[in-house]
Length: 103
Figure 1 (tube, rainbow, N blue to C red):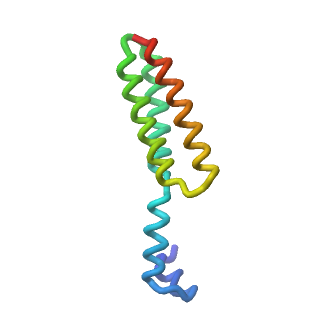
Figure 2: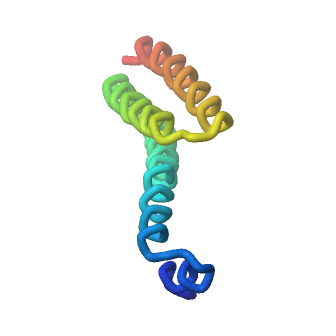
């Protein structure tokens, strides 16, 4: 694999532009948030299977999921991602309402 600077230099771009592109790509990347969301979903499944007094735990997990959704929305520069983020937040809020009924 070639270093990014080499690729940009070969394409006639300078290193400053390469750095700007790299920073921008990192700024809009939502991979970490997606991984954490998947982890929270698994944590929710585990808590539900565990049983017992899980209301507070589920509420905390839903709160964390909401934070991830907010971060995704703040990074979104695409209408489809924004729409998905809004739908995600709506569904998380529905889950939080249901959690209020769990002890």
